[in-house]
Image (tube, rainbow, N blue to C red; front, side, top):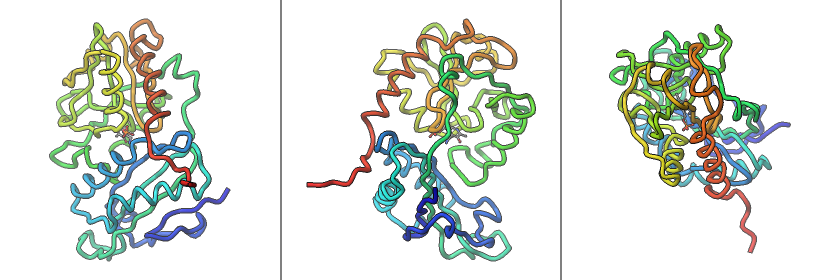
Length: 295
Ligand code: PMP
């Protein structure tokens, strides 16, 4: 089905939503983006996603030509216009059209694009059996070079790791930083559980500060599970009792095998299960409604 796309303030049919080949988002990956979910007509953590978009934009000195409230309104309007109930929303702000040099000052007009579509997710069975993942030889971008907290249009670092995952036939790859500390996966944050404590790498070591990561930390607090943000190496993952990934698309998904080692008893752990259940409750009640207000 053809959908509507928000393109610089206009709603245009998908087939007509086009961007110039001179856009620096295309030529250089110069821009920022967000991936957001709507559940049963509610956009989950919309304000948090829009706020992260603005933080990313500040990180690359990009002025978004709309106010955060206008972006939020456009997201809600687009989901409604596309008659979507459960949706995946992609927000993109690119540097805009410039010349063939990389100077961003030659790009006077950043482009704001919002796409809302259905989402393809992991099969439900994997939330029981867990994923197998492998460690990539590709190190996560050094925050001193390109901080992974900037959700930029340049995802080659992650794509290179994804290619390795594909090569060994697993759906996700763990990425380490230059010092060998566990960072995150190509499109998900990573958590381990050891002796009842939930542990995840701190954001400063070079990871995206995932919105789902934050939501799961909230869920853990409600479940009275102690949470630590600590650096650790692969040994801690191999020796963990439980491991899981978090992300807007994957939600909370168990990991039961890492680099050929079985994690815990090889099944989704009991704290992981509790967090999956609590997160699923959370997405039902939190979120900005896309329903039209009818008095
Ligand atoms: N890390 C990376 C590299 C990602 O691309 C994503 C997905 N946006 C995440 C973590 C998870 O972030 P979130 O929970 O905000 O989707």
